[in-house]
Length: 115
Image (cartoon, rainbow, N blue to C red):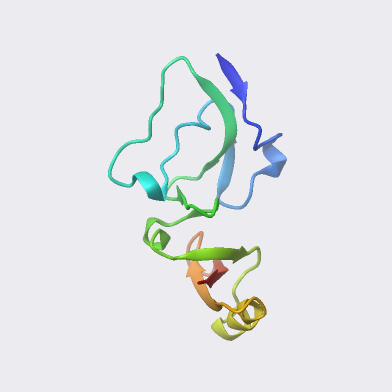
């Protein structure tokens, strides 16, 4: 059975750190299942954006390094994080603290607003 995910229309809608897979959308590791392999029923094929190698799905929906799983994220700004001050200023507008976290390797960070 092949199902196209309602979350992803095509490859162009994948974010940084994601790649479109025509069949592995239901088989990706996430922060909520770090201690076990994700269920991948045979005979099921779901197309969706999946996290690139070395990244896992965070509860926010972004693909991040595993060490970011414990970050209590409420908002991830879709922009780089040139420095901690700029990120914190953005997050203060919604009364939260800003933290720059490594997303796709050195020099590639996201501004995360934490509760």
